[in-house]
Length: 449
Image 1 (cartoon, rainbow, N blue to C red):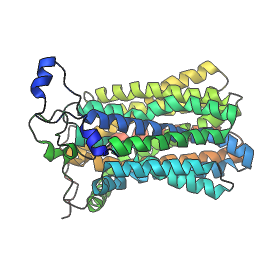
Image 2 (spheres, rainbow, N blue to C red; image 1 turned 180 degrees about the horizontal axis):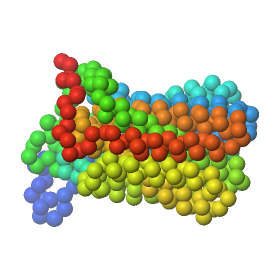
Image 3 (tube, rainbow, N blue to C red; image 1 turned 180 degrees about the vertical axis):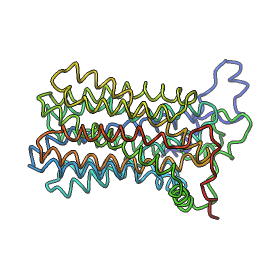
Image 4 (tube, one colour; image 1 turned 60 degrees about the vertical axis):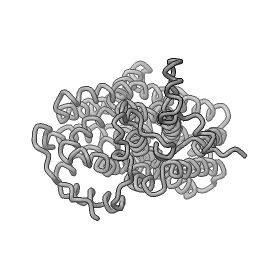
């Protein structure tokens, strides 16, 4: 049996080895960081597809099992909530057991939870499998994984890698949703979940063989680390990560700006993942629009997601991010008020898809800049992790409430209008956050020893 460590090391350019030969032939082996980034992108791509899959399951489960839409929405809400709540603790787990083991555990949980969904018969099984197990697994393979990989493995091109990995979730939605919807329509929802489980399990051997926790495991420094300062970026934290995370949370809770950001991100999650991500496809079906067409609209949003987030990041470096957030939330609110009247026209829905897609995650770069301004760049990651918990709680509540309103009133009209009004309130709320021109306050308590 060939030792996989030896096999992997044979394709890595060792420092100082064959350097003269490489210079003569004008070619150098790629840094192994790109292999790690590629594996991470594939994992996030798969997780992004799974994150969008519940919208396809709502109507088939309702039809076969006669479960109420509120019950199904509750399971999806649990999934969304855990997806955000697990983030700060996933970071601690990566520090404790390493990237590879954490990713393998997450992929195994996702694959097992999705696979067992095909045999479920009771609503509590949906809550346990798709809500708890898949929700926790996809939460580990989220933005915290992207940030950890980029920080450990890259010095040069770090911003580019963060952008590429962050776009993987949107790309997964674009790649998987139309295909999964087509499988559901032609073969049934069980074949769809079996296909998703196969993709998750298929990634496990690749991650097991090729993934590495740190560049030092292969005798390397991070990509672009010409000054040899990799240890400064990659050594594990001395303090207990769990204690550091909760210390940051406690300090944030004492800040008015933290609460204002948390409120705005609560609305952000409610109006995106919770409402549109979960209920747009069922709403399309209610109006006689085929399921595949609804999935294609969501997938099309992923393209404009990427464009909107990139443009927002560029603008956030040049404008007051509070003004950007006012514009984003106000336009999102108006688009949600318009949506109930767009179902009568495919062109109207297409316009909504383009407009809403540009605005979907545009709020994130501007919010991150405000976090860095108020709490310091060194605490941005952990603070963003806790704020994203509020984002996902908002999404979970919206997924459930929208399902209840649809069941009681027979329409999503009130859910769309309520979400639009919340976005307009958020547009006013962000004006009270201290701007970037002010000196950041030191609100984060020192890390406990």
